[in-house]
Image 1: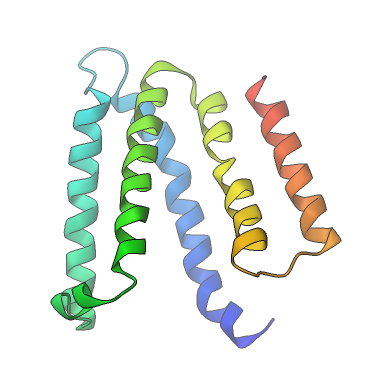
Image 2: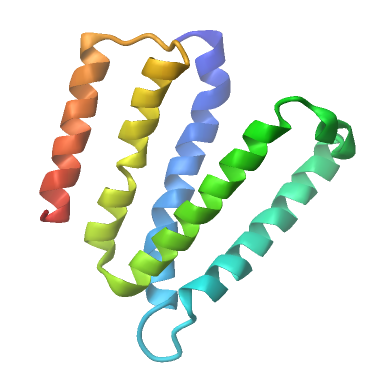
Length: 146
């Protein structure tokens, strides 16, 4: 394993573990008696996200306003728009359908993100990665009952 993998891998594993709990918790929160509307759940959960991110920025001393002049800010803003659309749609679909179907379909973003990385970001493509993408798509198809 190379040195960069040792820096990103723990974060990727933490993200996977934490994100695995989001869909089931939102499904419970947005259905049944005393259900919270999915759009309200988005605001509440993402307000907590923003508060946590501000805390991390303050703790690490990264600053904030200095980065607002970056030429890459447009990419961050576009990502924020797509993140907002994705989260609103995910929470709504969780309020309407089963986690066991919604989450695998949602998880197809992993396949599409990988393909975008290969096609537009110049990331290396191998037969092994291609096979992994095919298996991931097949798994989602099988798990979602589509």
